Length: 143
Image (cartoon, rainbow, N blue to C red):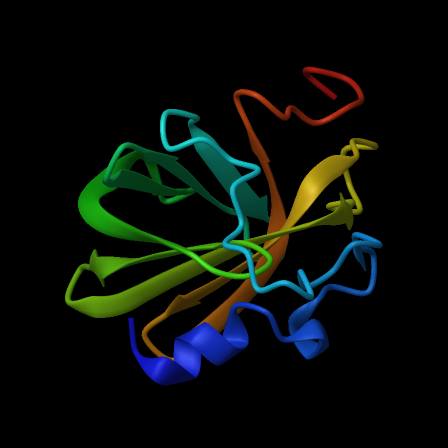
């Protein structure tokens, strides 16, 4: 992962206004983030524009309204001090997704998500929320 993205992984300036970071923030002992097991499926999504990425054991599926079936591509997982990073290449563009603890709302579904998500695809940066199979969102399953 490029050094610049490691800094982005934990930058509070990237948090969405509707999302608040967890109280524990960065571990003062420098321990690696381990709150999401490698076997958990990670789902991150955002609105305006709508997008979703589902990440499972080294593979991501990127979905948009124009591509509901999604595009599959390989990702590498990086555990940082207060979250996870995933890097890969999507349609020839660099892809980096970060997942950090914090209550998050997508502003539309009345759901609360346990993670804040930031995605960079090429030159575009997208903000959203995330959850895992072990740490689901709360709220309506189908709003």
